[in-house]
Image 1 (cartoon, chains in turn purple, cyan):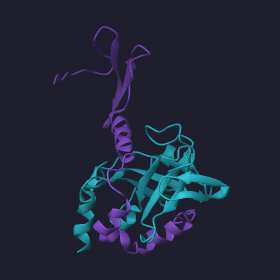
Image 2 (cartoon, chains in turn cyan, purple):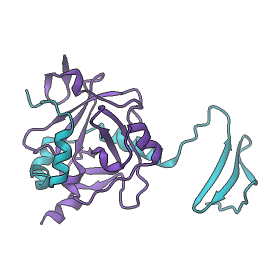
Image 3 (tube, helix red, strand yellow):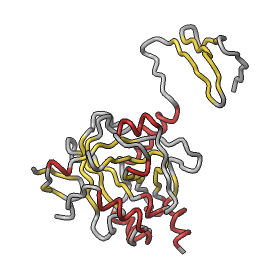
Length: 97
Length: 147
C-alpha cells in the first residue's frame, strides 16, 4: 500500500483523470475534494460495506423461524425499556397463514 | 389493503401501518414502503421487514435491545433532524439479520440500524460511528451473555 504525506492545499492524481485534493484538516477530520469523471463512482467505504451487508441480508440461507429454536434470547421477553418502545411501533398482525 | 408477503402469504394491512423510508435502504434505494410483521413465538423480538412493492423482498430484523440491553445508537444531528426528533432515544430501532446456513452462524448488523419515528411512521437506515458496533456480529455472541 502506498502511503503519502500531503498538506492542506496539496493534491495527488490517481491514474490520469482522478485528482484528490486535501482541502483542510481539523482535529480528527480531513476535508477532501475529489475531481473525477462522471463514470467513476465515489463512495464512502462504509456505505459500500453497508450496501453489501444489506444485499447479503436480503438472501436468507435458512428459514428465519429456525432462529427462534437456535437462539433462546429471541424467544424471551426483551428488557423493559425495549419492550415499551416496541409496543409503540406499528406492528400489523402478520402471523395469518 | 392486501399484499402478498414472503413469509406470511397474503396479508391484510392498513395504510397507517406502512413505514416510509423516503431514502430506501442501502442498496435498495427504490424500496420506500415496508411493513413490520412479527414472527409468532418471538415476543416481538424477531420480525420481518416486508417490502410493499416487492413481495419477495423481506428482511429479517430483530429488536437490538433483546440482544444487548446496553445497545445505545447515537445518530448524527442531520439524521435526527431528518427524522424530526431532537434525541436518538426518541426513536425505535431494529437491526437486520443475516440468516445463514447453518442458522447458528447467523449475524446481525448493529452498525446499520433502522431508526423509526413511530409518531410519523418515517424511517431511515443509518451507519453508526461507534467502534463497538459492526455490520456482522455473530448472534451467538449475545447468547453467551444470556447464560
